[in-house]
Length: 284
Image (cartoon, rainbow, N blue to C red; front, side, top):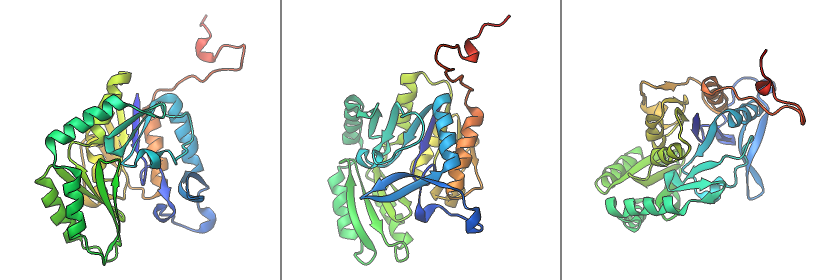
Protein backbone atom coordinates (compact mmCIF):
# COMPACT_ATOMS: atom_id res chain seq x y z
CA UNK A 1 0.00 0.00 0.00
CA UNK A 2 1.37 3.40 -1.04
CA UNK A 3 -0.20 6.49 0.57
CA UNK A 4 0.78 9.75 -1.14
CA UNK A 5 -0.31 13.18 -0.02
CA UNK A 6 0.24 16.78 -0.93
CA UNK A 7 1.42 18.79 2.08
CA UNK A 8 0.37 22.46 2.19
CA UNK A 9 -3.39 22.90 2.73
CA UNK A 10 -3.87 19.13 2.52
CA UNK A 11 -1.98 17.68 5.50
CA UNK A 12 -0.30 20.76 7.00
CA UNK A 13 -1.63 24.30 7.37
CA UNK A 14 -0.33 27.79 7.98
CA UNK A 15 -2.04 29.85 10.69
CA UNK A 16 -3.99 31.70 7.99
CA UNK A 17 -5.26 28.43 6.46
CA UNK A 18 -6.34 26.62 9.65
CA UNK A 19 -10.01 27.61 9.19
CA UNK A 20 -10.82 27.01 12.85
CA UNK A 21 -14.52 27.28 13.66
CA UNK A 22 -16.49 27.30 16.86
CA UNK A 23 -15.54 28.66 20.27
CA UNK A 24 -11.85 29.08 21.02
CA UNK A 25 -12.07 26.77 24.02
CA UNK A 26 -13.10 23.93 21.70
CA UNK A 27 -10.28 24.43 19.21
CA UNK A 28 -8.09 21.36 18.61
CA UNK A 29 -4.59 21.15 20.05
CA UNK A 30 -2.07 21.93 17.32
CA UNK A 31 1.41 20.59 16.66
CA UNK A 32 3.92 22.82 14.85
CA UNK A 33 5.71 20.85 12.12
CA UNK A 34 7.61 23.66 10.38
CA UNK A 35 9.73 26.56 11.60
CA UNK A 36 11.09 29.20 9.24
CA UNK A 37 13.49 31.93 10.32
CA UNK A 38 12.87 30.97 13.96
CA UNK A 39 9.10 31.37 13.61
CA UNK A 40 6.42 28.64 13.63
CA UNK A 41 4.91 28.31 10.18
CA UNK A 42 2.90 25.11 9.60
CA UNK A 43 0.70 22.95 11.79
CA UNK A 44 -1.46 19.87 12.00
CA UNK A 45 -3.67 18.74 14.86
CA UNK A 46 -2.22 16.52 17.55
CA UNK A 47 -4.80 13.92 16.58
CA UNK A 48 -3.60 14.08 12.96
CA UNK A 49 -0.03 13.63 14.19
CA UNK A 50 -0.99 10.34 15.84
CA UNK A 51 -2.87 9.21 12.74
CA UNK A 52 0.11 10.02 10.50
CA UNK A 53 2.40 8.02 12.78
CA UNK A 54 0.03 5.06 12.49
CA UNK A 55 -0.18 5.44 8.70
CA UNK A 56 3.61 5.45 8.46
CA UNK A 57 3.67 2.00 10.09
CA UNK A 58 0.87 0.57 7.97
CA UNK A 59 1.66 1.94 4.49
CA UNK A 60 4.51 3.35 2.43
CA UNK A 61 3.81 7.05 3.08
CA UNK A 62 5.13 9.49 0.45
CA UNK A 63 4.95 13.28 0.92
CA UNK A 64 4.34 14.92 -2.47
CA UNK A 65 4.87 18.67 -2.79
CA UNK A 66 5.52 21.56 -5.14
CA UNK A 67 7.96 22.88 -2.52
CA UNK A 68 11.66 22.94 -3.28
CA UNK A 69 13.89 20.45 -1.52
CA UNK A 70 15.09 23.17 0.86
CA UNK A 71 11.53 24.16 1.74
CA UNK A 72 10.51 20.53 2.21
CA UNK A 73 13.39 19.85 4.58
CA UNK A 74 12.06 22.48 6.98
CA UNK A 75 9.10 20.21 7.69
CA UNK A 76 9.37 17.73 10.56
CA UNK A 77 6.48 15.31 10.17
CA UNK A 78 5.47 12.89 12.94
CA UNK A 79 5.97 9.18 12.45
CA UNK A 80 8.64 7.13 10.68
CA UNK A 81 10.86 9.20 8.33
CA UNK A 82 9.47 8.72 4.80
CA UNK A 83 11.72 6.52 2.66
CA UNK A 84 10.66 8.48 -0.44
CA UNK A 85 9.53 12.07 -0.90
CA UNK A 86 8.61 13.97 -4.07
CA UNK A 87 9.61 17.63 -4.32
CA UNK A 88 9.46 20.42 -6.92
CA UNK A 89 6.21 19.05 -8.37
CA UNK A 90 7.92 15.83 -9.41
CA UNK A 91 11.27 17.32 -10.41
CA UNK A 92 13.07 15.56 -7.59
CA UNK A 93 12.61 12.22 -5.85
CA UNK A 94 14.33 12.00 -2.47
CA UNK A 95 15.42 8.58 -1.24
CA UNK A 96 16.20 8.59 2.47
CA UNK A 97 16.54 12.36 2.20
CA UNK A 98 18.97 12.32 -0.75
CA UNK A 99 18.24 13.43 -4.31
CA UNK A 100 18.00 10.71 -6.94
CA UNK A 101 20.18 12.17 -9.74
CA UNK A 102 19.05 9.71 -12.41
CA UNK A 103 15.40 10.65 -11.99
CA UNK A 104 16.22 14.36 -12.17
CA UNK A 105 18.26 13.80 -15.35
CA UNK A 106 15.28 12.11 -16.99
CA UNK A 107 13.00 14.98 -15.98
CA UNK A 108 15.38 17.57 -17.44
CA UNK A 109 15.58 15.72 -20.74
CA UNK A 110 11.79 15.62 -21.00
CA UNK A 111 11.38 19.32 -20.25
CA UNK A 112 14.08 20.33 -22.71
CA UNK A 113 12.36 18.35 -25.44
CA UNK A 114 8.76 19.42 -24.86
CA UNK A 115 8.67 22.92 -23.32
CA UNK A 116 10.02 26.39 -24.00
CA UNK A 117 12.87 27.29 -21.63
CA UNK A 118 12.23 28.62 -18.14
CA UNK A 119 13.97 31.88 -19.07
CA UNK A 120 11.31 32.69 -21.68
CA UNK A 121 8.55 32.24 -19.11
CA UNK A 122 10.38 34.29 -16.49
CA UNK A 123 10.80 37.14 -18.98
CA UNK A 124 7.11 37.04 -19.85
CA UNK A 125 6.21 37.24 -16.16
CA UNK A 126 8.60 40.15 -15.70
CA UNK A 127 7.01 42.10 -18.56
CA UNK A 128 3.35 41.42 -17.77
CA UNK A 129 3.04 41.28 -13.95
CA UNK A 130 1.75 44.56 -12.52
CA UNK A 131 3.90 45.97 -9.69
CA UNK A 132 0.65 47.15 -8.10
CA UNK A 133 -0.26 43.60 -7.06
CA UNK A 134 3.07 41.78 -7.41
CA UNK A 135 5.02 41.16 -4.19
CA UNK A 136 7.73 38.70 -5.28
CA UNK A 137 8.90 36.87 -8.39
CA UNK A 138 10.78 33.60 -7.89
CA UNK A 139 12.10 30.50 -9.66
CA UNK A 140 12.26 27.10 -7.99
CA UNK A 141 14.98 24.49 -8.50
CA UNK A 142 15.60 25.94 -11.99
CA UNK A 143 12.44 24.08 -13.02
CA UNK A 144 9.46 26.44 -12.72
CA UNK A 145 8.49 29.98 -11.71
CA UNK A 146 5.99 31.50 -9.33
CA UNK A 147 4.74 34.90 -8.22
CA UNK A 148 3.63 36.01 -4.76
CA UNK A 149 0.73 38.43 -5.24
CA UNK A 150 -1.71 40.60 -3.30
CA UNK A 151 -4.89 38.55 -3.60
CA UNK A 152 -7.14 41.53 -2.84
CA UNK A 153 -6.00 43.40 -5.96
CA UNK A 154 -4.85 40.50 -8.16
CA UNK A 155 -7.05 40.26 -11.30
CA UNK A 156 -8.24 36.72 -12.04
CA UNK A 157 -8.37 37.61 -15.72
CA UNK A 158 -4.60 38.01 -15.76
CA UNK A 159 -4.13 34.42 -14.62
CA UNK A 160 -6.43 33.20 -17.41
CA UNK A 161 -4.45 35.16 -19.99
CA UNK A 162 -1.21 33.73 -18.59
CA UNK A 163 -2.64 30.20 -18.76
CA UNK A 164 -3.53 30.64 -22.42
CA UNK A 165 -0.08 32.01 -23.25
CA UNK A 166 1.67 29.27 -21.25
CA UNK A 167 -0.44 26.46 -22.70
CA UNK A 168 0.79 27.24 -26.21
CA UNK A 169 4.34 26.78 -24.96
CA UNK A 170 3.96 23.54 -23.02
CA UNK A 171 3.39 25.09 -19.59
CA UNK A 172 0.49 25.17 -17.09
CA UNK A 173 -0.67 27.76 -14.56
CA UNK A 174 -2.05 27.25 -11.04
CA UNK A 175 -3.24 29.86 -8.52
CA UNK A 176 -2.86 28.73 -4.90
CA UNK A 177 -3.65 31.36 -2.32
CA UNK A 178 -1.16 34.19 -2.78
CA UNK A 179 1.00 32.24 -5.24
CA UNK A 180 0.68 31.97 -9.01
CA UNK A 181 2.67 29.04 -10.41
CA UNK A 182 3.91 28.59 -13.97
CA UNK A 183 4.97 24.95 -14.33
CA UNK A 184 6.06 22.88 -17.37
CA UNK A 185 3.19 20.56 -18.33
CA UNK A 186 5.34 17.37 -18.20
CA UNK A 187 6.57 18.26 -14.70
CA UNK A 188 3.97 16.33 -12.71
CA UNK A 189 3.59 14.75 -9.33
CA UNK A 190 1.98 11.71 -10.93
CA UNK A 191 5.02 10.81 -13.03
CA UNK A 192 7.28 10.81 -9.97
CA UNK A 193 4.69 8.90 -7.97
CA UNK A 194 4.49 6.25 -10.70
CA UNK A 195 8.26 5.82 -10.45
CA UNK A 196 8.11 5.37 -6.67
CA UNK A 197 5.19 2.93 -7.02
CA UNK A 198 7.21 0.92 -9.55
CA UNK A 199 10.23 0.77 -7.26
CA UNK A 200 8.31 -0.55 -4.27
CA UNK A 201 5.94 -2.70 -6.35
CA UNK A 202 2.87 -0.94 -4.93
CA UNK A 203 -0.37 -2.82 -5.51
CA UNK A 204 -2.73 -0.04 -4.40
CA UNK A 205 -2.13 3.72 -4.35
CA UNK A 206 -3.95 6.25 -2.16
CA UNK A 207 -3.61 10.00 -2.78
CA UNK A 208 -4.86 13.36 -1.50
CA UNK A 209 -4.47 16.93 -2.72
CA UNK A 210 -6.24 20.28 -2.98
CA UNK A 211 -4.83 22.18 -5.99
CA UNK A 212 -4.92 21.89 -9.77
CA UNK A 213 -1.31 20.71 -9.56
CA UNK A 214 -2.66 17.72 -7.59
CA UNK A 215 -5.28 16.70 -10.16
CA UNK A 216 -2.91 14.39 -12.04
CA UNK A 217 -1.79 12.87 -8.72
CA UNK A 218 -5.39 12.05 -7.79
CA UNK A 219 -6.16 10.67 -11.24
CA UNK A 220 -3.13 8.36 -11.04
CA UNK A 221 -4.25 6.88 -7.71
CA UNK A 222 -6.60 3.97 -7.12
CA UNK A 223 -8.40 5.85 -4.35
CA UNK A 224 -8.24 9.58 -3.61
CA UNK A 225 -9.61 12.47 -1.56
CA UNK A 226 -9.76 16.24 -2.00
CA UNK A 227 -10.56 18.81 0.71
CA UNK A 228 -13.56 21.11 0.77
CA UNK A 229 -11.22 24.04 0.11
CA UNK A 230 -8.64 24.83 -2.57
CA UNK A 231 -8.56 25.11 -6.35
CA UNK A 232 -10.12 21.71 -7.01
CA UNK A 233 -13.06 22.41 -4.70
CA UNK A 234 -13.58 25.87 -6.19
CA UNK A 235 -13.58 24.39 -9.69
CA UNK A 236 -15.95 21.57 -8.69
CA UNK A 237 -13.34 19.08 -9.90
CA UNK A 238 -14.38 15.44 -9.55
CA UNK A 239 -13.37 11.92 -10.54
CA UNK A 240 -15.20 8.64 -9.89
CA UNK A 241 -12.57 7.29 -7.50
CA UNK A 242 -11.90 10.60 -5.69
CA UNK A 243 -14.05 11.58 -2.69
CA UNK A 244 -14.79 15.28 -2.24
CA UNK A 245 -14.64 15.81 1.51
CA UNK A 246 -16.77 18.53 3.16
CA UNK A 247 -14.19 19.54 5.76
CA UNK A 248 -12.16 22.70 5.30
CA UNK A 249 -8.89 23.72 6.92
CA UNK A 250 -6.82 21.74 9.38
CA UNK A 251 -9.70 19.42 10.30
CA UNK A 252 -9.62 18.11 6.75
CA UNK A 253 -6.02 16.94 7.16
CA UNK A 254 -7.23 14.83 10.06
CA UNK A 255 -10.13 13.43 8.01
CA UNK A 256 -7.83 12.50 5.09
CA UNK A 257 -5.56 10.49 7.37
CA UNK A 258 -8.53 8.67 8.89
CA UNK A 259 -9.75 7.76 5.42
CA UNK A 260 -6.31 6.51 4.36
CA UNK A 261 -6.07 4.37 7.49
CA UNK A 262 -9.43 2.79 6.66
CA UNK A 263 -7.82 1.44 3.47
CA UNK A 264 -4.38 0.58 4.87
CA UNK A 265 -3.68 -2.95 6.13
CA UNK A 266 -3.21 -3.45 9.85
CA UNK A 267 0.45 -4.08 10.63
CA UNK A 268 1.65 -5.86 13.77
CA UNK A 269 4.00 -3.69 15.78
CA UNK A 270 7.08 -5.21 17.43
CA UNK A 271 6.42 -6.70 20.87
CA UNK A 272 8.60 -6.23 23.98
CA UNK A 273 12.25 -7.30 23.63
CA UNK A 274 12.71 -11.04 24.00
CA UNK A 275 9.04 -11.81 23.38
CA UNK A 276 7.37 -12.57 20.05
CA UNK A 277 4.79 -10.16 18.70
CA UNK A 278 1.22 -11.49 18.68
CA UNK A 279 1.41 -12.04 14.90
CA UNK A 280 4.42 -14.31 15.43
CA UNK A 281 2.81 -16.58 18.01
CA UNK A 282 1.84 -19.88 16.34
CA UNK A 283 -1.72 -21.07 16.64
CA UNK A 284 -2.77 -24.30 18.34
